[in-house]
Image (cartoon, rainbow, N blue to C red; front, side, top):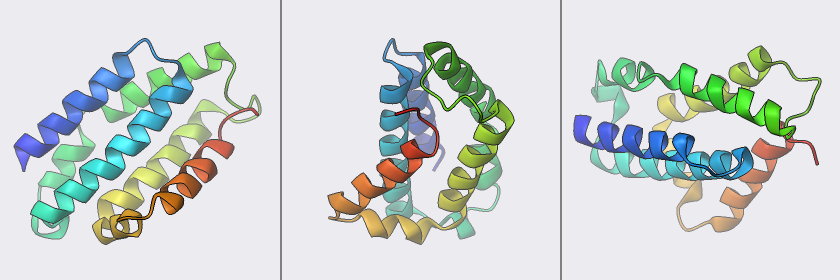
Length: 129
């Protein structure tokens, strides 16, 4: 389990540290998390993983996401009236849902339309259009 989690963490860091614009980073992160939890749920159940939830949640996620939000604000892509604190809460809600509802990933199995709809909902909540 640690190997899968470490690979996901390394992949997330590569995305966050890339020179891509924030919107592309967000799309890549969301896709990678869907992929991670799909692969993770195939191998292990988080309910039986015990302390692994804490391990996942402690991997500097908050700092990396705060940096991404600040970068997005500098690029002017986020809705101005949404504070960083509220954006973090929104991202935490989504992340919490997928960590604690691994079976929810099955809605994406062979259903690219659902994934596209989720991307749309996710991004319309944060980004200026």
